[in-house]
Image (cartoon, rainbow over all chains, first blue to last red; front, side, top):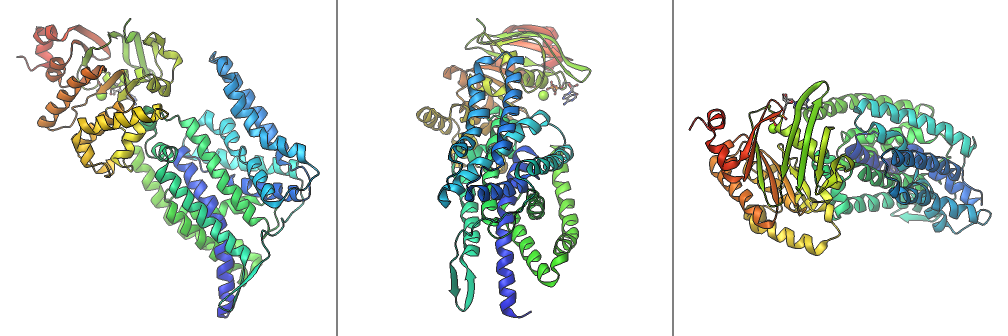
Amino acid sequence: MDAEIATILAMDGIASGAIYLLIGLGLVLIFAVTRVIFVPFGDIAAFTGLSLAALENGHRPGTVGLVAVLAVLATLKETALLVRTRELHRLPHTLLFYLVLPLAPAAAIWFTTGSVLPMPLRIVLALALVLPIAPLLDCLVFRPIADASVLLLLTVAVALHFALDGLGLLFFGPEGVRTQPLTETVLDIGGFIVNAQTLLIVAASIVFSGLLYLFFEFTLLGKALRATAINRTGARLVGIRPTSTASKAYLLGSLLAGISGVLIAPATTMFYDSGFLIGLKAFVGAIFGAMASYPVTALGAILVGLLESFASFWSSAYKEVVVFGLLIPILLWRSLSLGEVEEEEAEE
Amino acid sequence: MALLSIEGLSVAYGKVEAVRGVSLAIEPGQIVTVIGPNGAGKTTMLNAAIGLLPWRGRMSFEGADLARLDVEERIERGFCLVPEKRELFGDLSVADNLLLGGYARRRDTAGLKQSLADVYDRFPRLDERRGQKASTLSGGERQMLALGRALMAKPRLLLLDEPSLGLAPLIVREVFRIIASLRELGVSILLVEQNARAALETADFGYVLETGEIVHSGPAADLMHDPKVTASYLGGH
Ligand SMILES: Nc1ncnc2c1ncn2[C@@H]1O[C@H](COP(=O)(O)OP(=O)(O)O)[C@@H](O)[C@H]1O
Ligand SMILES: [Mg+2]
């Protein structure tokens, strides 16, 4: 391997790391706010890519059906809850947040099927379409067991991923797709040929990480999310509702996952089940940060990307084996320190 | 109409009833205290009243049935708790803790600005430590911050769980002085304390809780001279 190949591999690695990074930040966010390790963020990314591909071909994305099913189920559940607590006056609120808003992007797509929209609009629509999935799943699956142990929540998250895989096959079919490149420009930087798309991926991940930082540091909602993560009881005592912070955290995490889906889909063929490995690698990045630190998660994700890129150069058939094999010792070491953190919290 | 009315309140942890058939009432403008030894069920009673624990019995705040309100709705109506453990946001600054104290009335920006100025006025120490993380504060400062954070919600009724717990005597006196001064803001207070003397000196009315049940009650001045109370709680003076 010479310097040129090493540079190319490094750039590839950083680009895929940047994609895992965005999902990893979402994982840390959701874990902090809800204690759920939301494995299905990888699926959210994959579904975004698949939706975008369908929109490019003027087809109706399978996501429309998926969101419709989830929205109807969540609305039924929430309405039943209102009936039981005799709070039917809140029905309009429930209908708006569980039915109308989640289905609005799906409806927009329903009526524009057949015509191919310009790329920025397609991207926005694909993102809007997948955004409600995670908050609806939260309402259906995690809210009823919000006080369960971390282990049980993780088990349910993994089960949920497999359920989503099944639904993905049902709604998207088994075909692999690749979306149009976001840009085909090729840059020559000091003798190195650089794909502008690679730069775009890295830039997007820097911009969105920065925005996330600003959100946490300077907005009341961002601070409310941090407060919930720091002290759940304290948050309730100032009137921050955990269910509503969780929904907002899921929306934010889905946006990050969706963006990574948009970025990855032109570079990799996406299948209904491509999300698992993407999510798993993001999870490994987040474990570097002990599921708590955003900056360390970002570094971890980049490291995973680099490892994967160099491993695939040496033996592409075994790249996952190499990546996860090399990571086992790191994971062990990190999960030990993660365990300590949890015990400390339990003592409080 | 009583501001807070509690009738036959029972709270259990599993099969163990920590509070049994407690009834009490707080009128607008009153400071009411519940004194009792460690483990009597004082914290349990307050946590149930604010909605953090399931309970049986009847409770209403300003006539509204508390069985139908969750914690957040209580806060929105000005019914707040300063918990025994303070439950501050340790990693956030003092200023952010106060800002979040007003979360339930976040749309009232002008009112919040005024409340923040009032809190800094009342607690100059917090003003000096605005940018510091809450976790770096001393015990007394943490208690001030917990009080200040609750005041940001513009409470009509404040439940205080052992505000003097773990504080140096000089600071304890300051805390009770502040509690007495809250009355002028129109805040009614339910004060739970092991420091019976200071609590009865500050309050209008008092209850004595022992092993989950109310065993004495009366105007605070009377309780202070009641031999049964002085023997167990005021060191026999
Ligand atoms: N989380 C809990 N689980 C089980 N029992 C508890 C719990 N918290 C308190 N208790 C018990 O309930 C009783 C009352 O406790 P508490 O309300 O904390 O008393 P106080 O605040 O008056 O000191 C005690 O016997 C205590 O051991
Ligand atoms: Mg107590």
